[in-house]
Image (cartoon, helix red, strand yellow):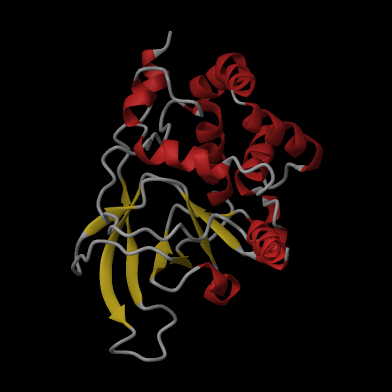
Length: 262
């Protein structure tokens, strides 16, 4: 009985922490590269057309096909409030993304990270959420400063790379303006990031001010400018810290769906 109660306490504690600023520890090293299989559509030149497709086709279809997404969307519609140039649907999408209950984020970002094929063959499950998040970041950046220095903690081990390499996160990367805000989210491999295309979504987050969150789109490129190790710097905030600077964008799937659908 005591063991069961301890397990339930640990499980409850885990659910109240954000699930987005860290990832699950795994045995194998994860790649740090250009994320070639990413759904990285930036919608440059096709925002209006894709907005129409989301409204008239994708959103309703995807909500009906995914109960978890539907539950999250319905709850967000009651709580999310538009502001700073965002429409209601943008605010709802941001709330859905940042909410832990229900957790749409995990399945969504997994699909974004490796869903290039499904995106092109019309089987991707989140056309609507992907577009609305991307468009929300674009609109928010019009009123926010650039660059922003943010921090991302993980519990993961990544392939070792060298200074000068260009990488993408390849998914919507949740970061914080203050690395002390996310100290419980991991200290194995971390990133100090200068982003030009990430936007502060704190006002629209289901978690409000708890994370001071800046969300970075999948298509932003970064160049590794320095690498720091705790074995060399005992006071370092993580075992390994990559400092990266924005190096513009690369959207391999730009307008791929909007231009394909008639």
